[in-house]
Length: 389
Image (cartoon, rainbow, N blue to C red; front, side, top):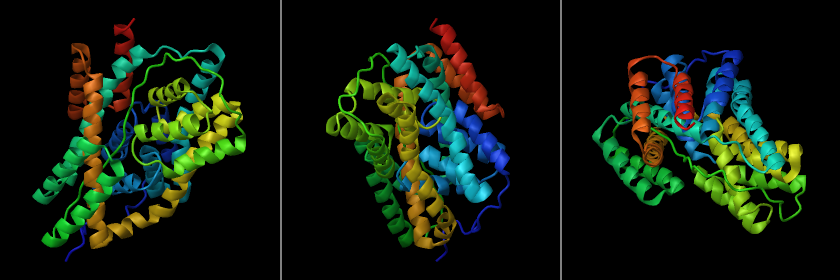
């Protein structure tokens, strides 16, 4: 029996300096709008297509690993990519550079929220950016899918995963179930292949609720521990994060109202970078600048530790036949989850002729040119601002 993907058994040789890793993820931290699926699509374009730091197959393996551990998968992808290019220092620098811009922007919005009792109006920007983001995600799914779906067993298991994901939305069950299914199918048929990955969600909430004082007193220690617990336990999409936050902060501890929580999640969605910077907003509302810093550190810390522990294991696991089959299944499930999320986002975001035109133009430019996707996002924002004036 051959190990899957034996043609690429070795860890890729690092090709980037620390400065290059920092520059890439700092720029993505300022410009990666659209939630985790869009972030991963942008990373694929930057590190596979433009810079050729990784192959599509290697990118898929890292993405599968990111989907298997708790925490924000797009941030964990930044950490994995940083590790492959610059070792342990790359984990820290890639993650910090990706998180920091979003955290600072979220902090500014939290200050405005507390100071003025409302959030800035950004409806026009969102209107124009969302169709562009959908086009970016679709392009990434297409490219990664071409690498992943190499034989009919993969297509069959992938189709089943897609149906189950659309019907249940149970991220971890779909990931683990598909991984086990691929082990069984490929063991029986002694197949070799590669598959694709992604999960997440992009809820879009209104920004109309006004802040209210937290109902219960909050200590910095308890704030840190609550967000550390959330960072260590949350799998799946932004909806799962919302459920954890509601259970911990609204229902159990009474630190927030439902209106405050929805506003916090909305800010995490409309700023670039990781959705988990929702913690920055909540931390500031509850305990000022110290609360923002502690909540942000706590919710991202488990991801840093888990990537540092698992990063060296991804390549050896790929060289193991059964572990490779399982990772192929996880990748396939993640691709199915990404497809479901993209359909949901597209259905909610592309509702009129201008939005349709933006999505089509963006898709054509992505497929036919080497235009940086950041410029497409800027184009969408400008068009949206003009259209909604």
